[in-house]
Length: 116
Length: 113
Image (cartoon, rainbow over all chains, first blue to last red; front, top):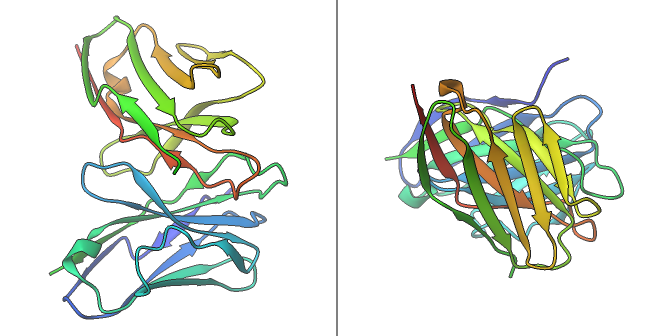
């Protein structure tokens, strides 16, 4: 079946502009995660959704970052007033959302964001 | 806070040799330890995972060991092949949290033909 998809694959924007990144999880997966991967670095957790709720937003680096999820499916990560330090690859992952919360996470291809 | 340390940051081996990557974690409540392989420009792909109720798991040329007392876990790749060249990430998670993964910094493995 279809895996996790993300769009756009690449986004170049100017400092101060807002951007929206989209994630389509695997059908039926109730858990959705956003991570950020800076150049040559590991993956940094941003936010977790269970259904449409976000019980863990602890990784969002500032109030310029927000995310929502609708219909228990598609999620959008919004970065307002982008800064150069926001440049990174933004990865989305989904899992079945089992109660034990240690289920396999499947990653999307990522969106490479470049802020000029 | 939660932390995962991964070593080495780079590893170069000859084809056919073994490769070992080690990780340590800080939170003793961690009970799920996946390993992801990421090829250049591609998404991370799960290659193997282990849960805290076992000490070792093997899948063909790949094995993972876990020492909960020492809070260490390791990835072992035997009979390495050029296509094993990639960045490998370890991660830790625990069932009492949201399932978020705390990742190590990654190991760039180069297998020389």
